[in-house]
Image (cartoon, rainbow, N blue to C red; front, side, top):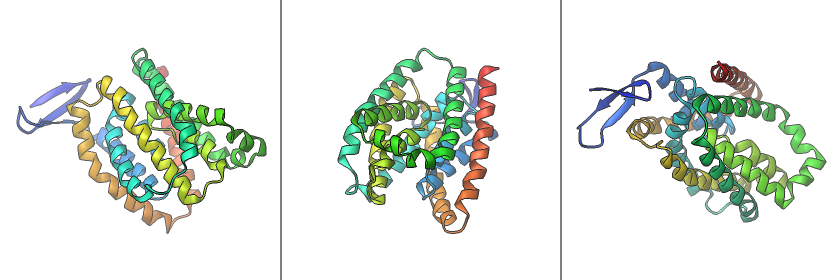
Length: 273
């Protein structure tokens, strides 16, 4: 049976009254989605920062709101896989300073979501993607700046970084740069930093379940698509582990950042036109 859903063709598979699968019948979407999930897995496999690709790339084929809804269950599965490895290695102080702001940022995103259209969200996702590239290119300078490093140690800075991270995470699962800008200058040992980031985004993604559900993002189509894509994530993790031992990391990221700029510009064009 063929059904219409949000302007896209979807195919329903399975018993009518039981756990029906409702999948988007668009090859371009699936190409974007597989690339998005694999890059997210690569990020979890050691080449951090690539998770920003997921929503912008999928937004080339579907609504960015729907793209975020499809990715959230996948991210939560990845989060809980990582928690087992870092459950004893995290910094309580950093979490206490950033998580309250993150929850407020999520609430702000949830309240605004009802009053903006999809083109506005496309523009916001595009700006976040382009902003991420700008941050990645200047991160070393920013984190080594003595004045900015002192500012990052203040309590209000932690709350503000958490708020921005929660808001950008709500829109595009892109809370990494604001969190990093605060957490990295704290001088945490590498494993403690990684564990703190895992715990932060595990809580953030769990909290996002509430507004996403209220916005209707966990319907049959989104959940069925997430379920199909989840097994691809470990493949991305294995690719990340393999790549980190064999490639020039700087060249790899330059190529991906260039692709992200192209995606961001395309979404800006779509949003304004």
